[in-house]
Amino acid sequence: MIYIDASAGEGGGQVLRSSLSLSLLTGTPITLTGIRGRRPKPGLMRQHLTCVQAAEAIAPGSRVQGAELGSQQLCFVPAPVQPGNYRFEIATAGSCLLVLQTVWLPLALGGGASELELSGGTHNPMAPPFPFIEQAFAPLLARLGAPAELELQRAGFYPAGGGRLRVRIQPAAPLQPFDLVDPGALITRRAQAVAPGLPRSIAERKLRTLADLLDWPIEDLEVAACRQNEGPGNALWARLEHEALTELFCAFGEKGRTGEDVAREVAREVRRHQQTGAALGPQLADQWLLPLALAVTQTGKGATFTASEWTEHARTNAGLIERFLPVVMHVTREAGNAVRVELQPQAPEPEFAP
Image (cartoon, rainbow, N blue to C red; front, top):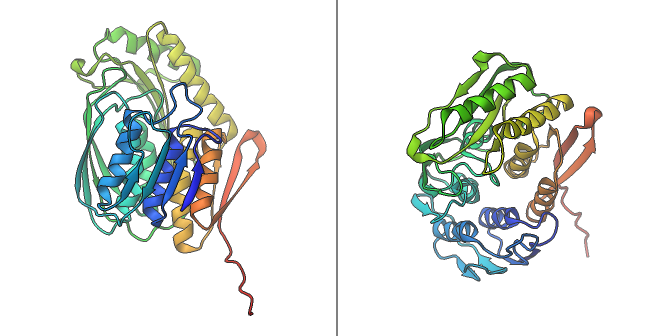
């Protein structure tokens, strides 16, 4: 049993999700206290409760205590993961991508194919949106040895929700870690905006502002296809496709916030990332820690990546992973404010003869 103070460090829902994933992957029982203790409304919200229910569903026979709305304590004793077909629904605009990330790796390493149907929010300001998962995270996971197909059937924006996606998870091959120190040459760049249920001019204004700020030509801009009944929604993202990986930076509009403000936020993130010369942006670095740590553990081979920022989210996630897996992470500052993250297998403790 591993006891986890979920209010420590970043103190949000990621501690819960990573703990559930790691518990399923390692067969380790967990007890969490202080769940989301640093949030204005502590405890399990609807999307977090769905994560717990999803973890229990893919491992029939798991024992759970504390799985109820508002609970700040949870005990989870995992059973073996059973790949198969599952459907998970969040009855709010809570992110179904976060539910997916809870069960993705356990199912991929479960020895068989799985197909998931998820509904809820797909384009959320406080979670990685679908374009980020599809274009930035999933390709790296496939390269690691865990491919999946993602299909967005209906976009779901905050606060309405109602999004739907289908995910086909293939059985993972033996995971092979690799370095991501240099992003490589820039191949293409693309800015896309969506504004379903709102005037098209809102999306166009964001794109024009972003192009002016980053000095991007008109051919790099696009109002992405989206059904009007999927709104109201308002989002802008910039995609940088490099030789080694694709990065994506996104921001969302909201009531009282101008399109120009949204464009300025995305432009700041793109410039800050490019100035460091790092391979991964802050969000992707955070997401990449767990799958890479699993690959390092399985092979006994180390791996290194660079990131444009080492967030409190990532720092908390790294510390949690080290409690479950025999891996050690070393973080150092590079020139240009980038950080270098090295993952090494933890040497076994020496055995002493009696």
